[in-house]
Image: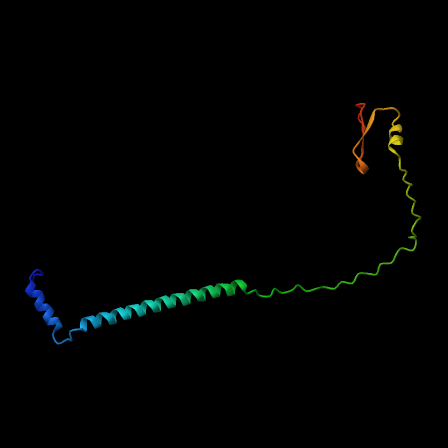
Amino acid sequence: MKRSDKSQQDLWQDTLDEGLPRDFAGRSLERMLDSARRRKQRRVAVRAGLGSALVLALLALLLHRSPSPLPEIQVVEAPPVTPPPAAVPAAVPKAPAVQTLSDEELLAAFGGRPVVLVGSGDSKQVVLLDGKKQR
């Protein structure tokens, strides 16, 4: 049978369509497309459900923390501390009194060496200008 023969195709078409209603092909196509759409929707719903379940399972694993066992606390009683009988506090020596000098009195204490006070207020520093290193 040759495909190019028009009468052969008409014959086959008449044989296949024999006894069927005229809109059978259209209804059959609609049913097939509806079935395919439902299957696709079901696949999408199942995948979305599985994805959601997987995400929830991962979150549950990440957020679930098993309680770690606490270490046992051991109570150790220290022996009472008693001061030695001969330990009597000695007299605390008095700190030397602080004497405040004026700038002129401080400069006079260096005995004629070239000295400069650098700074202002409480942050003054004494600088020796004779080139000798001080230790």
